View 1 (cartoon, rainbow, N blue to C red):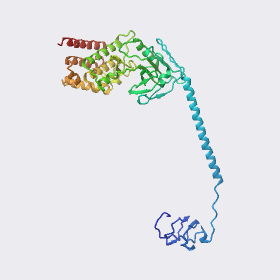
View 2: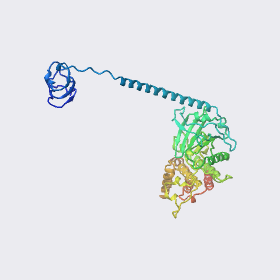
View 3: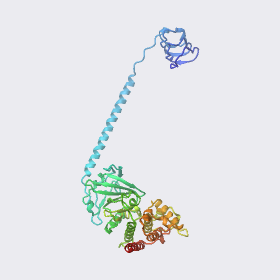
View 4: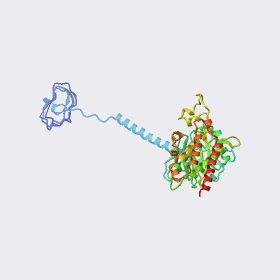
Length: 462
């Protein structure tokens, strides 16, 4: 009520109103009365405009107008003051305690960091494991070139009971590698996929490494160690071996020499930067990868090793622009191979509707078939290759086979007969029935025949 402006008349007598009388602006009010109510407290300053009769009948009102003195205001409560002081003391004490805890945690961090410095990871000799004496913690780093800040962790197999182990394989690239070098190095995230993440890591000595963090490889830590060490012992020139690795129950870490020339995927689908990826080069890549797979599948003394996740992003070019298969043997699809082919029911059951046990080797054949389709069509792969495979099948079925090939190959004048022959190899590799797919040695032989025909045609041309 006291906020009402322009009020001229206010009559509220003979009611049961209580509390203090609102502090009206009595400068403008002409008529006013609150007599016979239950108001209490002092009468406001009425500017000598109204008499006692405007306030009579309110026993709890006081003031000179009613000749009734108002009691003095009570002093501030000492009890409240004591409480206020106590509250301030508790708050101040809490801040001090928090600061002490932060300082202790920081001191503990510095102590652990200094303790871990200088711990060298020894180079492993054929199957022995170099063990770091301290469990490393999660770390994140930022690329010096302004790349994305990235994170990876190296945790022990059983926290608190087993020390972490980084196996460094004999290699001139990481001859004097220290455990802390990986933890301190700036790491640029290159990609993230279904099975893990890939980072570009630069060490203090300017050595550039590729670090693969795997979430789940499908095999135990011990089997993984044996598998990677065996791949390193193979020493195939077209299979890129890791230079170091780490594994636990939760995750696995692979370190490779970084390949500056990028991947087959980048060469096919990225910026060309003046590079010409002609038919002869594509055929050479196909022949080289087929020969490498045939060797890894069928020519090892103790049984073959499948790749498990073959695709164009895992085919890298070394400093001589020779194709190499990376991330070999990291993923094993034991009893769950059909997840790779989950988009088609025909890959899950045979003609009688029975479950079919799929071989990881046959998955490699399928993956290689998709790579061949990429080389021939220049098109991106999506949906584990099913979209590209379905499109190629539909075009061939309509007898528009020439429409399949990359326009760059057509403009180049590449031999259509050899391209058709390679397309037939690709179609055999992506056969819906795994048992009908050729072996990698058969694939290698077929592609080498096409390559020889291509070489003869070049010689015979005037």
